[in-house]
Image 1: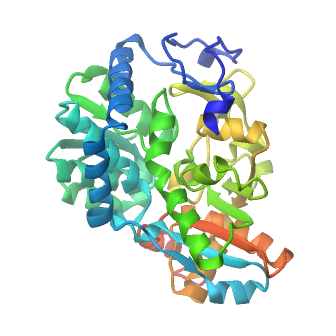
Image 2 (image 1 turned 120 degrees about the vertical axis):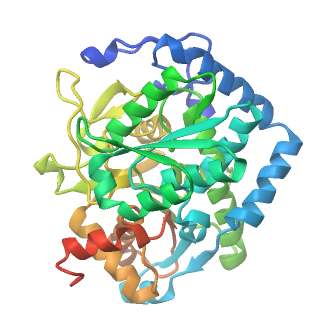
Amino acid sequence: MGSKGRVPLQEPSLKGALGRALMTNKMLNAFFGIYGGRYVPETLIPALEELDKAYRLIKKDSTFKKELSNYQRTYVGRPTPLYYAGRLTDYLGGAKIYLKREDLAHTGAHKINNALGQALIAKSMGKKRLIAETGAGQHGVATATGAALMGLECEIYMGADDVKRQALNVFRMRLLGAKVNEVTIGSRTLKDAINEALRDWTTNVGTTHYVMGTVFGPYPYPEMVRDFQAVIGQEAMSQILKAEGRMPDYLIACVGGGSNSIGLFHKFLTHKSTKDIQYIGVEAGGYGIDSGKHAARFAGGSVGVFQGCKSYLLQDDDGNVLGTHSVSAGLDYASVGPEHAFLHDTKRVKYTYATDDEALKAFALLAKTEGIIPALESAHAIAEAVKIAPKISKDKIIIVNLSGRGDKDVQQVSELTHEGSL
C-alpha cells in the first residue's frame, strides 16, 4: 500500500523553525505520498544509510528470516491467539468482536516484534550497544529484552512523568540490565525522550544502534518497523479465515506513533480481497479536543516536520510543538507515523479518538466481561469497539488489536479512580 503512495523526494512547505531541517536526496522509497523523509543532522546520515543498506540485504537473507522466525515461535510465543470475545459481544449486543492477543506476546505487548528484529540487525552490523526511547515503557522493556538476548549493552531514555506513572516497567528494564535515563526537560514525556535518544545516537553512531519504537522518525524506520510488525496482520488474516471462513468487516487499533495499528492493517490493506474492510485508528482524545489537552493529531494537528520526518503534528501557527495529554503514556505524543498521514489523506483509514474517560471505562469493561486487563493504549481501541459494535448487525465481524496487557497500568488506574472504584 505505502509504495503506491510514494513520490520523488521534494522540499516540503513547512511552518516556522521546524521547516529548516536537513534532508538527503539519496532515498528512493522514503515517502508515503508527501509524508516521511529524512530530516536529521548531517552526522546521522551515515548511520541511517548504513541501516538502510543492512536492512535491504538482511530482509532477503534466508538465514536471517529463519532465525527471526525461530525466535518469534520459541521466544516471543507467536502466533498470538485471535480470541472471540463472546461475553463482550453479548454485552454490547451487536457485531462479533475478536481480539488479536498481542498482550500474550513475551514482555506483554507487540513491541517485542520490532525490538527483537532490530536487535538482530544491530548484532549483524557489529553494533555493541542499543539505545531506545520509551513512553509507556513497553518498548523500553522489549529493547532491554532484545539486548539481553543478544548480549548487547542497553540504555533507555524515558520522560520523568512517564517514569513515575510506569514505575513497574522502569524496574523491569533495570532488572534486564538496561540503564534508564530519566529525562526531566520539556514536557518530560515521550517527545523529550526521543530528543535525548537522538542526541546520544549522534554522539555514538559508530558503536550504537537506535531502536526506534514505532513507525516514525527518519527513513528507513517507518518502513522497517512496519515490516517487523506486519506479522500481526499476517496472522490475523489466516486466523479469521479459519475461525469464520471470511474476512472481517472492521479492523480497529489504537494509534500513538502507530506501529501496532500498521502491523494489523498492512496485510489487509495490501491484499486484493479486502477492499470492503473498514479500518479505524483510535488516537488519544485526552480531556477532549476543545480542551487542548489531548494527543489527537488528525483532529487537532497540521502538517509539519518533527524528529526526523514529515507528518501530522500538534503545533501552533509558528510551528512550535504543542503540549499533549493522555491517560496512556504510550499514546501521549505530538506526531504520528507518516504512513498513517498518507492513509488518512487517501481515506483508506478512518481516524477517530477516545477520551481518557472512555478509555478507562473500556479498561474496566473488558476486565469484567472477559477477564482480560488491557493496556490503557489498547483500551482506546476497545472504547471504539464499544461505540460501533451495538450499531451494526450481528453478522458483522470486528477485530480489535489488543496491543498490550494492563499490568503496567493497574496502579495508575487505581489512583485515578479512587482505589479502583470503576
